[in-house]
Image (cartoon, rainbow, N blue to C red):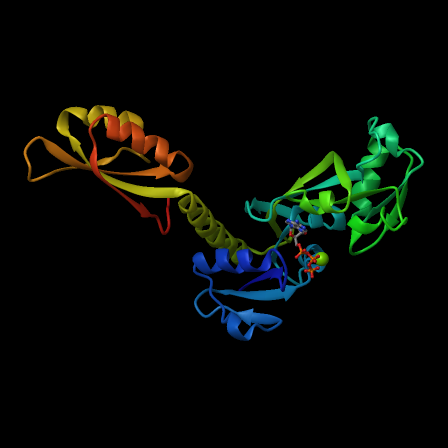
Length: 283
Ligand code: ATP
Ligand code: MG
């Protein structure tokens, strides 16, 4: 049995549950409890505040956890980052009132900086030889300069909209973060085996998310050209059509280049192009 800690309520909880669900690890989240056992996989989910996940994993209360890398860095617990998950992207940045002229890191000397990430900030300032006062607050960090609590902030930024609406500008991007899987350092063989299974499934789900399945009819003398356009995993499947001189070609293609590829395929005479979503992909 592998115990997986995830955020109970917040920005990472839905994506975490969804990823596990797609990986075939399902719990009845309609009656979400503190601890829920999966119906179909040797795992149980422990729902926690994200702040507590690194420590829970370090202590072995949970075997692995899904949490923002920013929390992993801040909590300074003995855990290993086992896998990056791609969702929940953000950065932790230094921001100052937009009316200030920014002169480089020295600007922060003698200043007071409000943050919920004192450890990351303390290390960053020390590494750069900056002497500033760290003012710890746990919420609404972005309003601190406006109300006179601080000269600057060190906070999470994703789009930057919150900064702008509080009259701040981002001047240093210090840490980049995304959701990661952290693991306890002393997992036994059984748990490691289950984790390997989970990892394999998570990768298959993530691989498939960006991929589309492409079917089309191609004149036989253009098959070589079509293969050059979409090389596929190993090589595309080619099946003869009942109509002489034509074949059906099947392949997978990354979504971000899908339209570009379709235009190239049409140019060489491909017809009847169908695009389907891919449920899982095992490479
Ligand atoms: P909890 O109640 O579990 O302590 P929280 O309020 O501390 O939740 P959330 O706001 O739900 O945390 O954010 C969880 C994580 O989502 C962050 O630690 C970060 O990794 C990620 N994240 C991504 N974008 C943002 C953003 N714009 N603001 C805050 N967190 C973000
Ligand atoms: Mg939190």
